[in-house]
Image 1 (cartoon, helix red, strand yellow):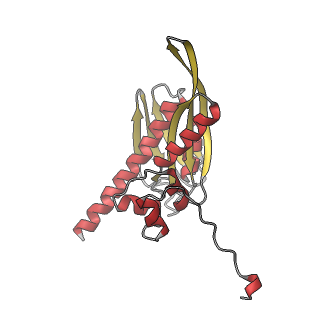
Image 2 (cartoon, one colour; image 1 turned 45 degrees about the horizontal axis):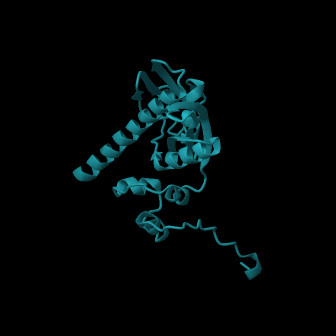
Image 3 (cartoon, helix red, strand yellow; image 1 turned 90 degrees about the vertical axis):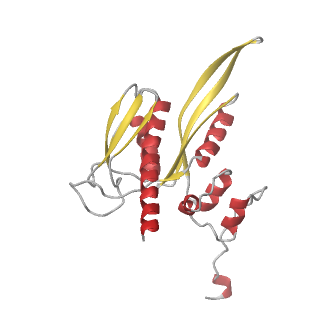
Length: 218
């Protein structure tokens, strides 16, 4: 390739404080989010996720005012619920409060990155068996407060047969076809979202432990 046609070097995200995880990523010892969990590491800086996952999308699920009574009178803060993901099997959920809406959203987005997890995908539906990662590999469930949800693998082309509140979470996780069964007050977005996130985390933990057991037994 001619010198004037050479590709531009990939942009490197500059980070003010270089933590051990950031250093390992830059040195190439950690290259995926899965590596972080496989090596027993903790995500303590949102910037690490931005380095590992270059294509992250954010979606604000809700912003609601929160009233607090104090000696000086009633104070209003805002609570934001944000979902982040790369639509390729990684997703996180974060919630935060602040005096300003923008600050609440930014804090929630950072927390969502800290809560980012790999989401196992597959084709677990007996109606399909195409082998493509369009759904989840098996049934999973989660619960937050009074809200409980069960997710079932769906055949390709089914779509997201779930409540509207959790569709952004599933889309950002890269799940396109799934059924659901819910119980409790699903009108509360926060509980509905976190219960669904818990079900995906359970799926990840089960997959992770199965892989670990297989490595020990081999």
